[in-house]
Amino acid sequence: MQPEDGVAFGTVSRSDSQAPIQQLHDIPSLDVLREKLAPAVAANPNLFYILKVRGNFRTMYVRSCFVCEKPYPTLWEAAGQQREFRYENVSGSIIAVFCPAYVEGINLPGWHFHFLSGDKQKGGHILGLSADTLIYQINALHDFELLLPQNREFAGLDLCEDLSAKTAAVEG
Image (cartoon, rainbow, N blue to C red; front, side, top):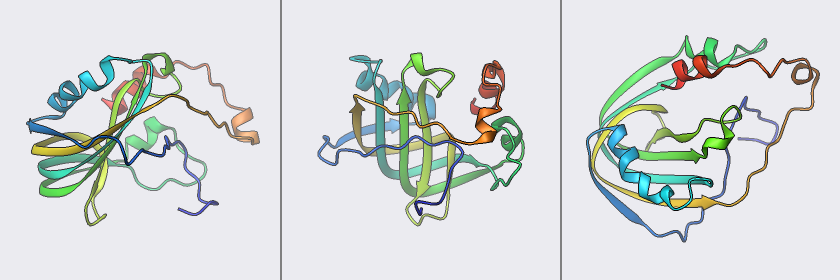
């Protein structure tokens, strides 16, 4: 991306390439992956964590929204136009963020997983997966910075609307 490129929302972090390289085995589902990662955040669930995973996936099930233009749709509206993709025997990376419970409303608590294939031609928000062995590194983040837009559109938004039900429907 170029500095002038924008995104509606993003979680960005540098990762420590010196973090220990670890392995996970026998991952039949996304729920099992979450369970296997639970001990990594259990010592301090009040921190953010960034996860980098590499591996060969027996199955990968993702969704991706279309490019949006002004006037930008809400997440709920954009997600209604998304496509889902199922891949078999695909290699690639998972980049995930764990957000603590206290940021609900600003971000989504818990793990949020995205996939990018090794050839960078396939990817999206992960809905399901399976793998035999995965190699990963995890980084605890001890600080975060929230940048807010400085424009008229942001100033005019009503940010007090409870979007939890719509977000749960979109994010699953």
